[in-house]
Amino acid sequence: MPKTGIRVGTIFKSIAMKKIHISIIMIVMTLTSFSQTGKQIPEGPCPDGECSYGVSIVFDQFNFHKPRTSCTSGFGLCIKVHTEPICEPCPMGYPTPDNMKTDISDGKVKAWWKLADNKIELHIPVDLQKVDGYGDVDFSLFEIDDESFIIDNQDKTIYATVKGGQYKVTKQENDFVVLLEIVK
Amino acid sequence: MPVVFFKNKGMFKRAAIYLLVIGISLLFSCKAWISKKYHFNQEFPFKTPEGYLSYLEKKKGFDLSHVIYPDTSTLENFLFYISKNQLAEYYGSLINDSTEIKKTESLQDNLSCMGRVINEINTNSKQGSITDTNLAKNDFYKYNFRFISSKNKFDLNNSPKPLKIILLYTYSYGTYFDSFLKEMNKFSKEHEKDAEVYIISLDYPFHFK
View 1: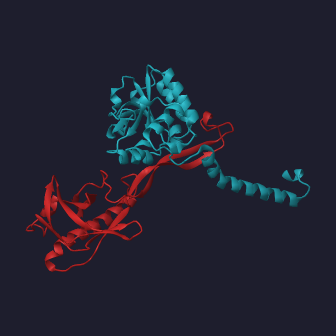
View 2: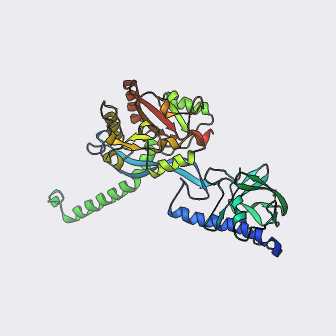
View 3: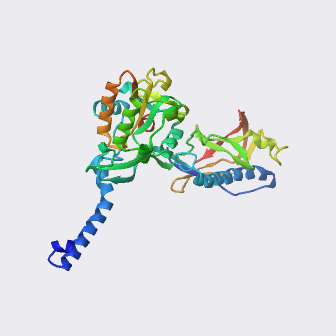
């Protein structure tokens, strides 16, 4: 599976579609914001956007005493090490318990997506309908422009873009779920 | 006076410079030398679970019925715990899945020191050593594990033995902890009635999930 990232285009063609674009932008803003927070208070073994691919041993320090003497006497080699995850960018749509949660807090929307059957499965929190300005929005249809949603490869080349159009929205527990067609 | 051993001050200065250079070289080359000697962070060579399990059993002497691995459902959280607590080969000595015997300050200072870990395990296994004052809460119950051989769910509380010693293992450890693992095999046999040793494979979920 190729490793990818995601970016969202800024093409706005009509005022009517603005709200849905804003929500997409909010996703990105939220992800950026979470990423910054993550650097200060890490909540997972890897930084945001990275996944663990294994573990490695990391040197802290060593001295020339024997391990058998609890590293306090004798002549030998005593090493202080610890185990750390090997972190690399997550593969495209890699689902982990941490990134598979939607949420709205402090006016920020946290959404997530994954690739499923060559489509993007986008999850948006149902509580979005309680947010100011969304009260009278029809959430049964999700509308998006061509190239508003671009999936990048790790080398920043484009892997796929979402096909613009109207998509039916289903509800799964606390999420609105949209299956978006992609164009490679 | 050191000058006594040298014919003149020039020779002494040169010797001092050599020693300094050797010292600096040692400092920078030791990590590389240690890594090479103990095969730290070596590439994982096994293509099949069978090959890996055979290695654990035959080369490392593990009793496969006591080797478990973190389930992917809580793998990230478990790794975070290990990394946050700077753990190496020793996870801890547990009474049940939410209670551990407190690690001493000496061990906390170097959790990878095999001598300190063995001393601590031996102390913990002595009768009467477990008291309310040296117990602490542990998050083990938050993580899901499976037996490496059967893939069945692992429940630490199913063990009837009072002491459960949990070790960590990854191929990245190379051979550095081999003598410790031998000691633990011996310990396991000597304390068959009162202690159980479980080894968590950190490799399995990444290579054979």
